[in-house]
Image (cartoon, rainbow, N blue to C red; front, top):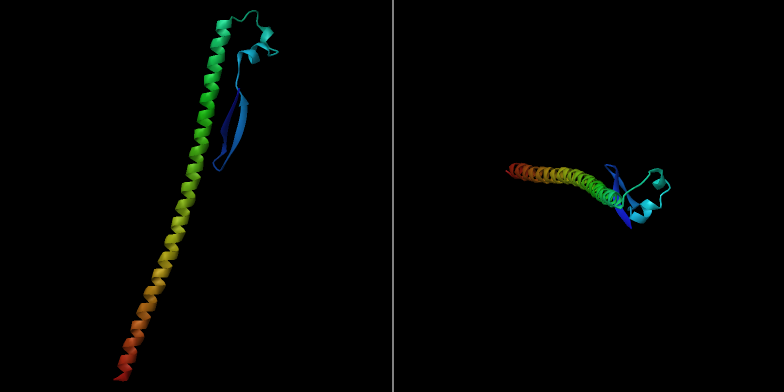
Length: 115
């Protein structure tokens, strides 16, 4: 049995990991298994369940942390883009307003010169 999850690396990066989940066969086949005198099947089953739950919880938390950092990065980019858009629109508005004022001044001066 294998579990895949996104592991948090940094605020802007994460990596997808493939981790084998422990099974009773994996544990009894391990080379360090025989170091202990006797391991009861009940204890081994409880340890297996605990390890499985811990690994799944760890994978969920890592994935959640990666997701939150991705959301934070996306919102930061959106805020910067909105700021740039506001600056461009303000510049366009000011140029248009200045053109209207200049045109009105030209009309006033032209009208005064005609008198």
